[in-house]
Image 1 (cartoon, rainbow, N blue to C red):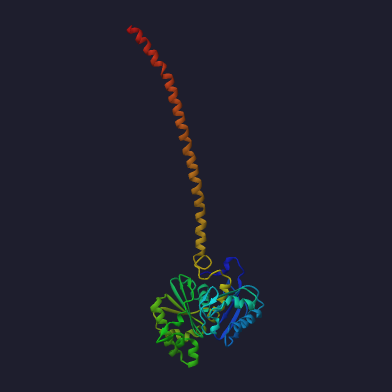
Image 2: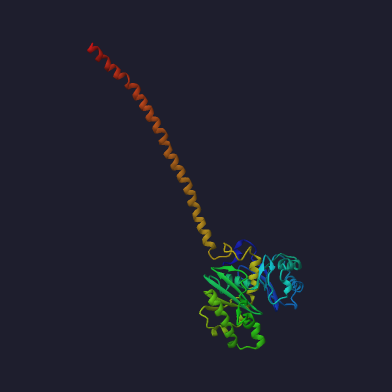
Length: 333
């Protein structure tokens, strides 16, 4: 993935990150991936119904006086802007069009994206995943466990691998950051739980690198050195701002799941190679045209001249034999 600001649109976009405990947002400069103002974070309402969450999102957006498309992360699998699941928010969200619900409150167009997918996109464009090829898995440890999977920079959306079963229950029920906080687990004990979870991912996907994001990424030095998985594990560079930045990328993009010139690192080489091919096509068109004309001219004229010469030869040759034969007849008589 490359920096999306090269698409000719404004480099400033707005992102809102909706989580189970907090809703935060800020404008983002897509040329750098940096927030252009200090983010605003408000507590997630409980119950986190569509109406209650929408009200808080409206407060965050209006705080900055933002007018324009808003990118919004949401803790759910999302299809066509509709929440198919609801993790750590009210179940009333299931079947609700997130984009229409939040758009009605903000008065702006809203582009919704799975929260972990947004964080992953941000890291692939600006952070620890930049320039990484092969299989990359981003895991966010917070209220739950979110995941984003990439192959050669292209996103596979809505993976929701925090819900894989370990010892008969969702992995996030044992290894999320909020579990560590609630149970008062030491970093060493929590690292064992994270290690167990990551080994499951490793056995299923054989990733080339695993990026640890979410709130836990701020304390990466406390637990990453304790992990024993074979795969290289690194902390997210954008830490807890990755969701906001990823949402802003979505706001300024048509489709972050597509591997086209707007998102992949090979976009510029592709343009240059296309430019090189153009002259070749022109030369190929002109050259045959000239050669065809050059070849046809002699072909048409040569037979014409030869025919005329043969006709002239026949015409002059016919009387000569007759002249020679006449004396022969007289001599014989």
